[in-house]
Image (cartoon, rainbow, N blue to C red; front, side, top):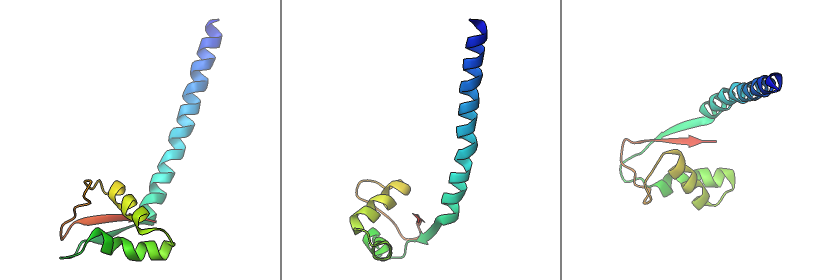
Length: 89
């Protein structure tokens, strides 16, 4: 009985370690694919999202939502000049 518990714990630890090892590669890939856009005076999130949506062939509302989530923007998607917006591709 004791051996079974030890083996189950070791298997769970190895499985967890395997997931942990795979995770950093995804973060590095996301960083490599990201671009930074610096908000200009008078620019809206819609202005930033339009060329991205056109390039991806997506609905602009989907791109705005992605930008909002990835940049922790409020529900009004408020941005200000000089703010850095991360654009993930």
